[in-house]
Amino acid sequence: MSSPKAARTARRAAMPAHPAAKRAPAQPASKIANAAAGSAEAKRLAAELERALASGRRDVLSTEALQALMAAVCKTYAAQIEAGEQLLRRGVEQRAVVELDEVAVAALLRAPLALEAKDAVLRRPRAAPVPAPAPAPRSLGHRLDEDHRERLVGAVVVVDGRVLVSTAVPKDGNCRYTLEARDAASGRTVWRKDGYDLRTASGVGCEQRRDPAGGGGVLAAVRGDNLEVFLSARDGREIWVGGAGETILDTDGHLGLVRTADHKTLKVINLSSGGTAWDQPVPVRSDIAITAYAVLVSEPATTRLQAFDPASRQVLVDVKTGSSVLGTGPTGLMLGRGRTVGFVRYGTR
Image 1 (cartoon, rainbow, N blue to C red):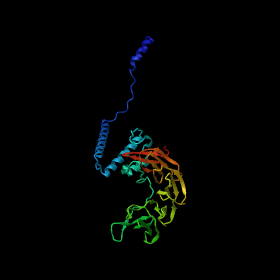
Image 2: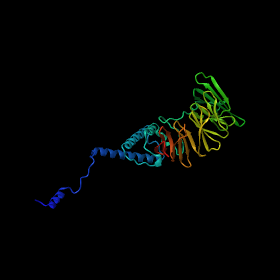
Image 3: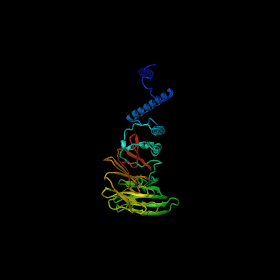
Image 4: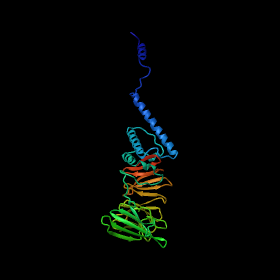
């Protein structure tokens, strides 16, 4: 009979020196080779694009090729994030970048070229599913003066079933304006107003080269007494009349944004009642716009970006970022800076 000590020694000798480590199942060599080759090709293409941009060339990829590439990258990125991978993100502040959700991905796939937006410029969403206020249509035509010279004395647009003809004629050093609305089907004159400037004219010749401001069947105009007003394109009535020094900023046809005379307060006007829905202190130098989901206030000097619920004034987003707003959705804002995009969910502060 062996001793207990000898038995223990024998058992130790029979045990492996180190526990066997668990090994992940080996991947086929062909799969690894394909992944490495794809990554190398992607890096080569990225370097080629960078060199082309550095030399001022933008024609390396066609629009169709760029859209296809962006779509594939977005889908791959979303799949990797969903699988739990941690991807390195650079170029935009961490607080202003999260994983792209379905709203951001869809917007990016539909409007990839919107990523060229410049910093500190608020831009309206470009395509569904990121809705935007309905802007007044671009001018359909212009009327020349009586001598048929190339001076654009009239502009023609179609808004809410009305053909609007805006005429500006220089007189006594000023522009004299006439605004006439005709029924789009019959051509019958529905209403006419004198002295209302749609801000379409510029220069001493009163040439009308700009599109009218407004949205959703509502026009922004300046009256003959220099008061700014919201006009109904349908019947020509004044929906709202501003006070001295107040400036109309934007409208979606339901709400109107107005800056007070001291430039320190934003007033949101309910265009159904003509009353003030709510107001909010804003920086004197700030960019302000309205979309279906948010009222946006951007202050370039401090890089502060705020988003408010249009109906309740609830603060949806309050962050500091040098990125531009590319679009809004029901759950957040899509931002872009250079070739980097991010998504900020409502509730981020």
